[in-house]
Amino acid sequence: MAFEKLHSTTIMAAKTALLSNAKKLVLTHISPRYTPKSLVKPIDLLNEAKQIFPNTFLAKDFLTTKIR
Image (cartoon, rainbow, N blue to C red; front, top):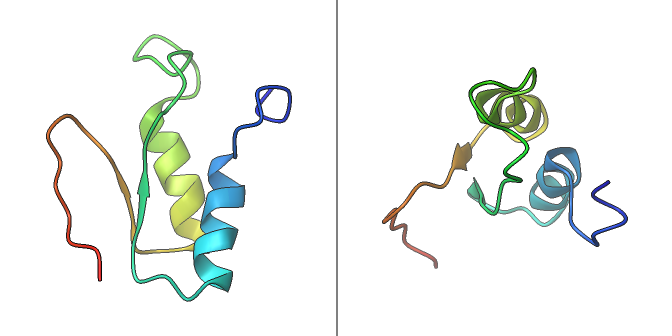
């Protein structure tokens, strides 16, 4: 479904962060399909990305981070 909507998967984002030598990856714009009642939860997406790029975080409202 991500491809149909022209979005990235968490795996794609993590691989891009790794290949670009990023220091941090912040996952944002998570699909509303991933709710506490769904089988796959946002924490599962985070853990999936962390397997590829360990310094990955989930964004939340009012999160700030430094960009250098």
